[in-house]
Image 1 (cartoon, rainbow, N blue to C red):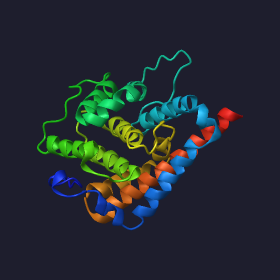
Image 2 (cartoon, one colour):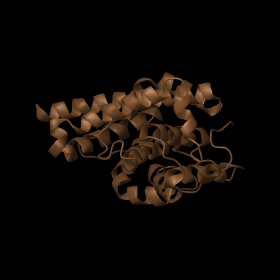
Image 3 (cartoon, rainbow, N blue to C red):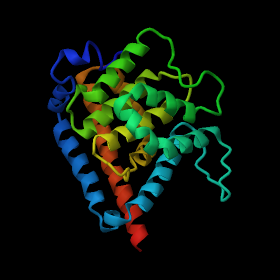
Image 4 (tube, one colour):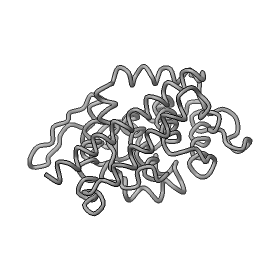
Length: 252
């Protein structure tokens, strides 16, 4: 499978900078940043963001599980039995405590994400596959996340999301892990520091387009990578609209 991350991340000034020159990408990145910024300026989120962030987290977890074929039903007593949804909810609950680890040691955070996401599945937990190149690609991605790029938030979020989906480093729950990692990146870069956006809902609603954009990304060709980034930026915009609806409902 072709990959975007080839070569030494530290061998160039910024390996992601050229992606901003792909058709439409700079504008899409700017639009995504502005949409998420405006959500943080919503009057409800100026003080009551903790409540809206909690709702966003649950919606994101349910949507992420549904993309993987899991249930979205959460019984009144909280006894979730679907293993995909249960894992997605565990991941969502842990993101806040995982953020410091994600910022300094992303590989450790990924291992923890998988432990949480796949706890109800058979197989080895928290250890990437031993296929050739998997460890190298994860190391390159970690290099980007720990200072290897100054790319704007939406761009780095897109690359993290796409690389982890394309790589599928674990035996199970890779989609849940990839979307959680994208969410952590969104928070860590300051794009969405309070975790208000819900781009996962847009990915679910446009799943065919989501899947097709990922296939394009895995080619490593500029057109395919650009298509993926544009999709992810549009999902961030849609996630901001979802966040606005959450805030509006809280103020009603």
